[in-house]
Image (cartoon, rainbow, N blue to C red; front, side):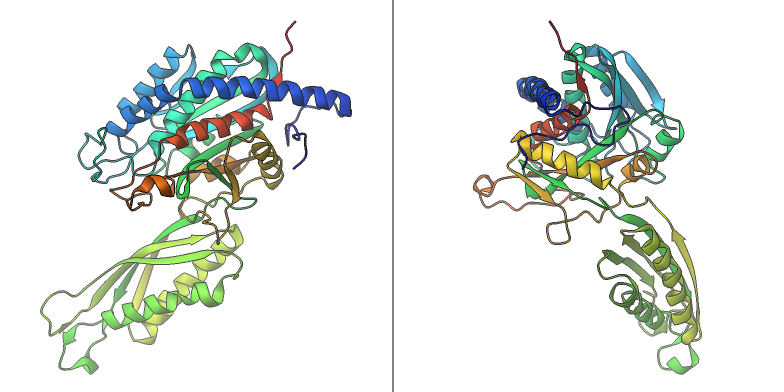
Length: 437
């Protein structure tokens, strides 16, 4: 890597380009970042306690009343008063910290909602809300952003620019909170926006990035098959909806093997089939198939949708039945700004804060889950990163690691300081240092 970090990618402001001035700016930026990182380390235990409170008191999407109020009070405690509440047709919060002088405006986002999962960990701060769990790490995301806000507020006299902190509601439940926040105008004037997600497939201390797509478009489907019921002894007089369902499921996988571009990831998941289950000698007249389709490009997504519907309808028709398809488009795929990612990866690596910086590919665990952060990037440059949260092999003591959305998921809390550090490194590349005599 270069001995100097390239500064402020994709900014609207002009940057002095002489090598002498650039070197001075780099040194000043590094010094300010060092202050921020030291401050973050000093409050790590407090931020961990914030995370544990959030984990113990999870709330579902569009129900984050206590969570939002807790975030609001934490912001006030940090002496941050430029706050909007109940944004985006929900309980979202947007706070701003203004530097000593005008400059770039950078937005950071964390999601706040939990999942309808009954927690099965033995954590001393396990969920006290039965049937609800922070199994996706949003408690860590929220605590991280609160910690970063505290650091930036404490050093607001040392930089030029504004940081917008978006605490988003309802990422887990469509239509999500991101689009409503964007539609409400909260990215107006923002130069770049960033988000992150913890990743249990990688050890704490690692950072993952993607030059292109950072998550998949996630669409849901329901196929209702209509056949004609009959007696099991006379299948020739019936139209077997179970046979149609089985063949439809097999045919849908040709979308992956023969229709999609092989270099563009695609996942077709049949998550459930409902048919029959009456007497064993009855041929079912109806069947229902449900699942999701995950794609990585807008063009591929449109093609797959059209082909999906054709396959379902034609397979049923071939057997004399019919199929109606309800295909619901969910969140689009995250499309990172490649030039921004390239510059920031250099800065992240140069900071020497992280043990490893990994490009997320199909071989290293690219995200194929849906993520409504994609809406923030539709009209604003930016990027989405992952932060490892698994335990080191030597610390596992034979225990299994569980994935996100699992009732036994446990995160290595060391990732909290890592996540704060990542956001601070990013901000250091945008916010101009204000010199003091």
